[in-house]
Image (cartoon, rainbow, N blue to C red; front, side, top):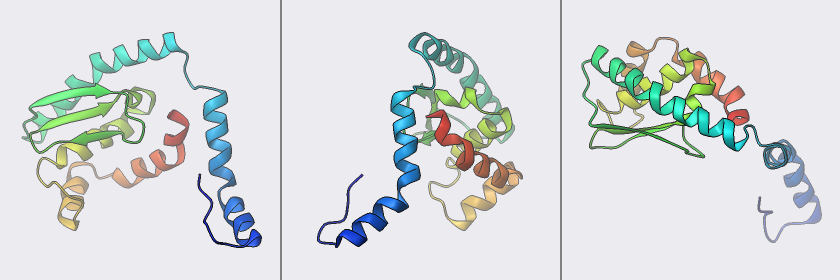
Length: 147
């Protein structure tokens, strides 16, 4: 975390106070890793086994074509979609409820129709995943604890 330069002590203290929750989350993450190395390896293997078939089934259901599926250890993303149809998924999707991980997969698949987050994109997503708002809320509330 960086503190704004050129400010007063009061401004610096106010800035630090605003970010106390973030600092505590970072400390907890560093001091208590969520998963041991062995457990993490098993979860990654499980993700590589389970997620690509689920994604390709969803793609077929929505008449979309995926060129390649990768499962990675992404720190800041749940998934990504390249213009070439390559979709990367975070192995941590196996840690969340299936309806939330399905939202993430549909989110990436809808980028095959539109490579942006325009209103048209969100309409495609709403048609494919009517409960996407609840899934996004779940990710905001519980996602940081999975990282």
